[in-house]
Each structure stands twice: as C-alpha cells, then as structure tokens.
Image (cartoon, rainbow, N blue to C red; front, top):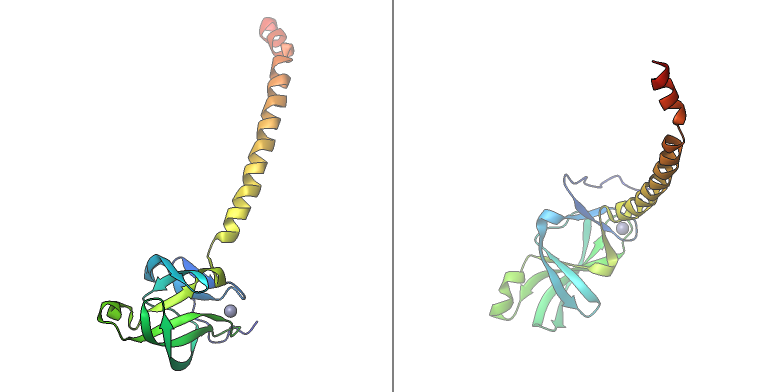
Length: 150
Ligand SMILES: [Zn+2]
C-alpha cells in the first residue's frame, strides 16, 4: 500500500472509506448533521492526507460558494470538498472548512463494533458453559462424601 506520505493521527479518526487512510480527527468534527446533494455529510475544521482539486464556483443549497473538491491522497477517491469562499455573509463561517461525505468515510473502530458482536456471541457460549458447570456441581455429591469422611 502506498502509505509513504500518510500522516498518522493521534486520537480517534475518520478513515477514507475506500482505503482506510485516516483523513480527519473526531476532535476536528464540527457538525454531524450536514446534508448535501450526496446525502449526509460531516463538517470538519481540518482534514489530513487530502489532495485538493482546482477551485470552482458551485451553487449549493445554501447559495454560491467557491469550493475545491478534496480527494484521499492515498487512493485519490473524491471524499468531499473545501469551502474556499462563501458568497452569502451568513455562510462565511464555512470558509476554510471541509465537508466529508458520510457514505465515503468510516469511523475508526467501525470494525470493532463487528468484533464486539462476535465477542458477545462468545459470552452467550460462556453462559452455556456455566449451566453445564452448574449441572456438574449439583451432581458432585462426591464432595459431600468427602466432607463426611473428614
Ligand atoms: Zn483513500
């Protein structure tokens, strides 16, 4: 894998959904409830391991913006865009910030949830073991016999 220039993040990260390169920190997540043309999106104040496309004017639901598409620097998949400039004053807070499209990124540890599901299956197996242990104990009249011997 071409991970030569990949910045390793300290802390929990969001990963490129295609190649699992970390592209943003959860600490840099500002809003989770963005909705764009491509569905749910997250709004970040900073991203890493990202390459920038050329600036272009784009009409978004909140008006005209100057944006740059942002791509994973590792697999070059388009993941979202950067707000370079907002034409509406009430959208100025977006300038210099980033959108990552939710369906194109994954939260670090999403695999762990699967692992957790597997381990909880393991727990139910343990319960089964315990019940057979109980059977073993209740049938251990031999212990009482031992006590009587003392
Ligand atoms: Zn990638």
